[in-house]
Image (cartoon, one colour):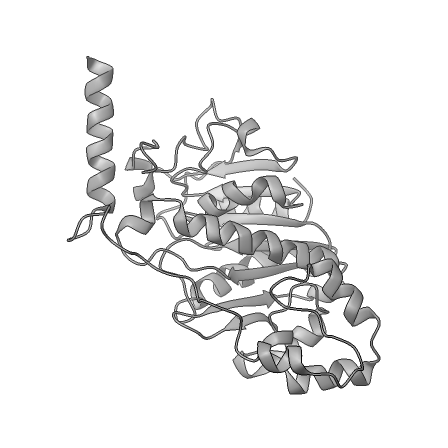
Amino acid sequence: MRRFRKTLTTAALTALLVGSTTGWASARGESPPGGPLPGTAAWLADDSLGRALPDPTTATPTEVAAFFAGLTDAQRQRLVENHPAVVGNLDGAPVRLRYAANAPAGDQVLAYDPRGRGLIARVAGDLENATHVSVIVPGSDIDLSTSGRTARWAADLQEEAGDDTAVIAWAGYITPSGIGPDLATGRLAEAGAARLTRFTDGLHAAGLPDPALFCHSYGSVVCGLAAPDTDAGDIVVMGSPGMRADDVTALDTDAHVWAATSEDDWIDHVPHVEILGLGHGADPTSPDFGATVLSADDVPAHDAYFSPGTSTLTAFAAIADGDL
């Protein structure tokens, strides 16, 4: 009976957390941008090279990389000039070309999609020549207009890790917005995991090192679902509501899994359960989960794990640089 009451209490608390004015079951939630990127039709119709260009929706990053490897510099540049929206988001394309295609969105922008709330990936450091690469996967309420916070985290991590490390602030999926059904279900995380997997496959196809993933809050749900299909060497979760897995073994990954949660983080009071698809499962910092737990005693808030001077940023930098 006591266990039953605890389950009911946990379910009620979780439902309260994610409830909306119309009820979580009936809410429609966020939707990823639909259809191919703008400019795809013109890209596919371009016969200037005397051969078909790779279909952005079906070509693998490896196929994309092989295609660009067979072009001259002049041909690559012409594609950038004529089809920037496609080249700038084409996983597997050379980093320098993606930067050039996305130049109107800023310096060292690796992906840019202004539709809807918008998606963007910014790079801190010298990605083309980096010995180590990290990707920060943010949680809820991050989009094109709020991605500066993730970019600051990337800059702080890169500075702490050193010149041989590049860090990508990957606001590359539709995150939950506000408190509602998307925050407690895996719908957006599933779509995000597919995008993250393709993105990291693109890094590999472009000849870059296997990345370390740093996954904050709902981003850790994305990383948990992507874990079996990425080639990440490390997966670090912080302020995690769960990874939709009972333990590290269930993640089905060869990556080293790390976890940190501060006692001053509100997520520490959220029930770690999954009931009828609601909630994200076990606490990654619990002993039974099997992750390597990092100290977060000096982290003052949910969004402060990358703050300069914290023990977590120091540990993250050591992981990013391959020293831990």
